[in-house]
Amino acid sequence: MFTRIAVGRAQVVRELRAAGPLMADLRAPTTARAPWLTAVLNEGVARRGAGRPVAVVVEPHTPGRPDAVAFLTVRRRGPAVLLTMLGEDVGPLPAGRPPRRLLARDERAAELLAGGICRLLGTLRGFRRLRLAGLPLGDPTARALAARLPDGLIANTRSEGTVDELDDVGEVARTRDPRELERWLPALVAREPDVRARSFLRSATRLHAAIGQVELAVLPGGDGLRAGLLTLVDGADRWPWWGWSDVGGLGSAMGAPLVGLVSPARGWP
Image (cartoon, rainbow, N blue to C red; front, top):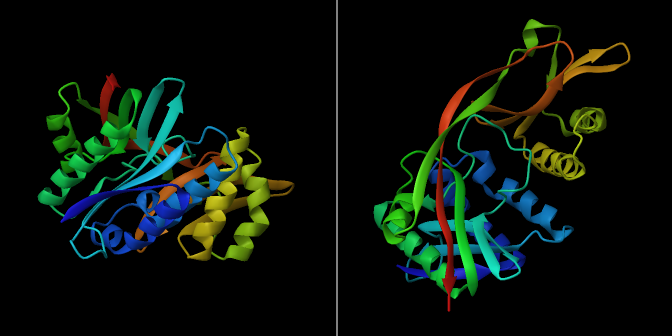
């Protein structure tokens, strides 16, 4: 196997498509799959300071389906460079589970992927900082990276997820029909105060509605919505994403641990 680095939106989009089977084999969450990350890339096109998308790819000697891949972003701020997971600053994200993945088919592929990420770091001039957040507990690539970076630090935080209890407060309408989603979407996302977040909610919802991977639950009232919730759907799995309620029905519960790897700023020649 060999490792290569793809730089720029067009190349990263190609790598997202090629990584589809690996994402499926590893049961990557919706937020670490090609449709979501494509929406992230689209959001970055119109935004200054979004950074440069990069993919570190481990594949057999015959190019084809990768055995490991990391989708990352390089951001430069003066003399400093920050390397993060692609989409780290784009949201809102669903809570309660690790949303990111350093995709690796096995331990050997994870070691090679860690080596490729270090190689990418070595190409960056100035003071660089590595920050990879939102990974699952026991991630083998994060572990291999920590072993390679003497100043690397792995830390865990506990997440909190949304619990859908809307059926307990009224007669809720649920749909995956893109036409119904489009009908209610303006009123739903109007409650999001951040302009960038509203834009991403609209684009990511429409994209996932087109492939049947988002459900909208609404509780209509006499003068509009009383509650609404978007849920990401992958087969039988349901992951509450974003919503609000004036009448209750959206609870919270302790979620899974989130792993982060940080390597402080260091100078490279």
